[in-house]
Image 1 (cartoon, one colour):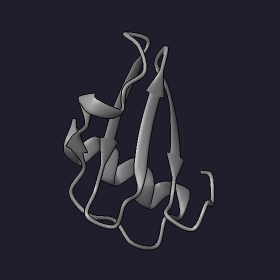
Image 2: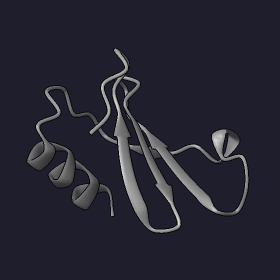
Image 3: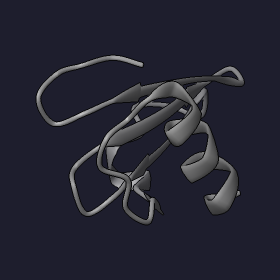
Length: 60
């Protein structure tokens, strides 16, 4: 899963890609699965759809 997230971020053009770790403390409900890397990039799954948000607010 982690390698797939990193590969997808690279494919979408994210410049800095770290190692995403699961952050259950940020998940507002069971519909979300959130990962964050050391660059504070968020990998947000909601109902199976991935959204990547970088620390500067860019959405991929």
